[in-house]
Length: 86
Image 1 (spheres, rainbow, N blue to C red):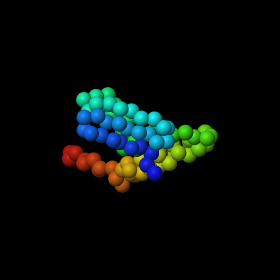
Image 2 (cartoon, rainbow, N blue to C red):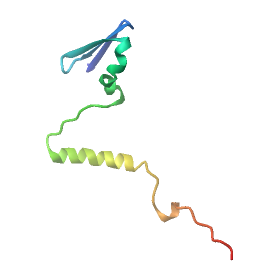
Image 3 (cartoon, helix red, strand yellow):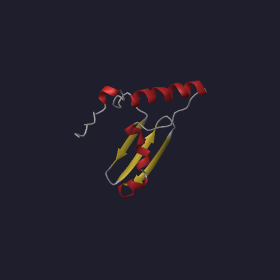
């Protein structure tokens, strides 16, 4: 079952949060004021951790994920400097 349900007649929007049993209703012209409510589409959200160890493990996984995307810092990948001729 989805957590969020969006209902619209393109003049008004109603966004239901099924888990929290809440909803927000607003006009299309006010969408810019409510854009944060749609953060779930991009994967934004609050996370709760039972312990500090669980939080650190999660952060370490994120660190590994994003640092693996960086280029290697080994000497082989550094560009060689040209020597000036005397």
